[in-house]
Amino acid sequence: MSELLSFFEALFSPDFPFVRNAFFAGVLSSVLFGVLGSVVTVKRIAGLAGAISHAVLGGIGISLYLSATGKVPNLSPMVGAIVFALLSALIIGTVSLKSKQREDTVIQAIWAIGMSIGVLFMAKTPGYTDPSSYLFGNILLISTQDLVLLLVLDIIVILLAWYFYPQIEATSFDEEFSQVRGIPTRLVFLVILAITAVAVVLLQTFVGIVMVIAMLTLPAGTAGFGARNLVSLMIGSTLFALLFSFAGLAAGWMLDLPVGAMVVVIAGAFFLGRSAGHLVRMRRST
Amino acid sequence: MSVPIVLHFHEVSFSYPHLTVLEDVSFHVHEGEFIALVGPNGSGKTTLLKLILGLEQPKSGTIELLGQNPSKARVQIGYVPQHASYDPSFPISVLEVVKMGMVEARGRQPKERLREMALEALGQVELAALAERPYSDLSGGQRRRVLVARALASKPGLLILDEPVANMDKESEVRLYATLGKLKGNTTILIVTHDMRMVSSLTDRVFCIDAHKEGKVGRTVVQHMLQDVEGDGSKRVLHDIEIPADQCQYPREADNE
Image 1 (cartoon, each protein chain N blue to C red):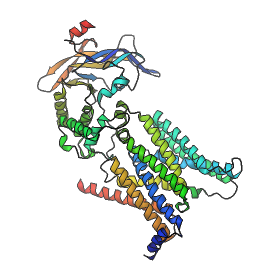
Image 2: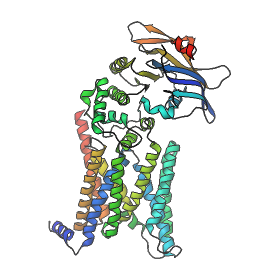
Image 3: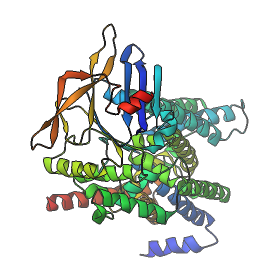
Image 4: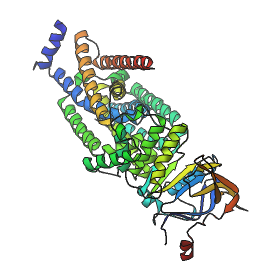
């Protein structure tokens, strides 16, 4: 109990700005995880998002190498990450549209090749670089500038989701019908993929690759059991993401454990618990 | 009296790389007609459907849908797909599915008007009472009728149903045809199905994709005679009696052409 109290003291104390920043990062990223995660879930592209988020490590590795060896001084890892994210989104998106039967192989290939390139370049980067710091991130290192970036992406995603809601809902539910209604379904798919790629990059630099993919799927999966429509799924997912982030931050602080991994474990436990509850209810009703 | 033509295929051919699917296809559909388009699996039904919906372009020949190119006029089609890849975990209500029938390429329409038109379309298929229910709670037959309501919501110039009674029990089939029977005359209806022997008794004319013309590789479309089957609610397709596909029972229209 005293640990929980000390967490709340830290949250409101001016001496620990990083705890407060981590809390706000949790709030702001929850909106992205909720809205984008819902779209990723209903469009069934979680595998694609997973591949993009892991391939990003390749871009990070190359950027770190170029920067540390002085070939491109002061190159931010985020630049390489964005290039790799968009590139892998473009390749996966094109394969998914043109050759559905190869999609699975290409997704796994991009996933594995991207990560391996990252590890290779990090190995040749002067000084010590730990790939796992990019896999799990550290939410406690978030700056105020990062929070502003997150806020801007939040606003863009909310506006796009609000404006194109009928088209997103229709293409996710029935692509063929949407095409007949004149919606450019391929463009919608590629734009969703590109926005997910950019969001993945921003989010993973704050919270790590593993947490990004977990939080894009688990809150939406948990909220999906009670959602009546896509908008309620988005709101429910945002609230669950908020709950998981806050609980993970508090538990990580109290137990002195990595916050990112803590959030994933809590989210996973909730999702599995609700899935089991749903299965039991289904069994009873039949 | 001249009855306007809704859909007109004129000497249409279509091929994929290394595969000629359709050759020399000519037929037309008049306003208010109830047409069945039949063909065995793999005969090119889906290709023909894609040509009508403007999702594929013919290699040669012309297609006119409501007097325009299909890719321009297809928004006036009420399309009822098979929707075989339906995801039961998709969170959506019956009313929202029907509202989707009026979705446009961008932007959105006033909420009240959407709701009003969606409820009217649900009334046409006698499912207005289920408007607020989750779509996944419905039976397969009810879901198919909701998709018909979705197609009707935009008040289409042509209603196209792809294999409407596939995997459906007899009672749902009767209900679906009862709904279509009420629409007959006011809405032009085209049903695509793989059952070559029997079609609904509502059918005015039947087109079959089952033959090659002499010296051609791709299949073509022919018209066959129909014979009523007593008390069965269906008509038998007489495959041995062939009518030129572009011939119909509107002689004045033919004279004018």
